[in-house]
Length: 450
Ligand code: NDP
Image (cartoon, rainbow, N blue to C red; front, side):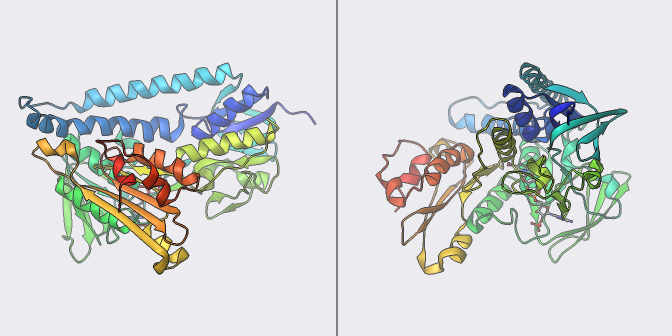
């Protein structure tokens, strides 16, 4: 049977683009279907614009910190529309680079929204396209709870294109996005109130990391209301009123306009008509095996659509591993062990491996050794502002293997990325100790802990 394409990819985000380019480079006839800007959540309304906003918000502190280093105090003025416009221009540039890379790899970009007609055919507008293999890489979309007045809230999709900077805003959710945007808008000068239903931010992270970061965020001026449920929203003459429930929470608060709900994401697969191809799903996500293969052996899925580890590098790696296996004659699977992750909070959080609690659960409390260091970084020795860095190693006391590395402080993401290599090589605490310190640095703490 002959098909229009060797591979049709649904979704030009991180996973889909990586797969389409790689398959094209292997000589396959590839089509990639996208209804929105090319780049996906990470490049268009996630990691990349978020990190640019993060850089922007960091300047407010640097202006103040500079005074201790002999610079005259400056009264800087921040202009939100300039930032929003510059960020948008950069996204367009990155999107165009991806389009160029697709063209170079010989992959055809097909504009529109795809839905299955049958197991080998997709409808895109009024076209029907068939393929030998199909990759679902449609990502995820924000999940907002069904509350009265929820239409007055926004998700992170809209945060980059706000017409004006909020003066006083609320953020519902204490996960990655909530914590990151609380820091960003606080740094830009907005008053931020974060509403967290649990007893602390970042559920699932190491307890000490959560507490250290929470306290640091509060010290930087963010109001965090924990054990606080959001009951509903109402538009008022002067903004949006948010009704709350919780022992320590006021009955309601009012913010000027922006209520950001960062309450998780769902796989973006509802409109794919997967039932027409009899593709199995579970809890709203595509079910795949370790080869990213669905129950239909020629249909694959990667990235947030499978809701496994929802991080960009994981989607990219899964897309490439699928293509290497199927089109490159090099079968390989994704390595899911010791995936490092960072929350671009202020201060930054980085982590890889097990938390202290997970390690104790896994190998027994008596076998876990914990090393930690809390210190004031050299940078803050001349500034008025002070902030402590926390670094922590979780070690198997029997084998001496490093099980987890956690950090809150400047450059945590950069440092944890390198540490993750050592962990994947099976590094022991002794290996860390045998490594010469690089002085003066923050990272040296990891090789000098006693
Ligand atoms: P998360 O799952 O990280 O956090 C969701 C937060 O919302 C949690 O605090 C959760 O509370 C809370 N929540 C969920 N439902 C409700 C509700 N009905 N009412 C009030 N609070 C609620 O999701 P995010 O949206 O922050 O981010 C989505 C995903 O995107 C992340 O999990 C991550 O995979 C990815 N991401 C990664 C980034 C990075 O790598 N730096 C940056 C941004 C996103 P509870 O803990 O009690 O469930």
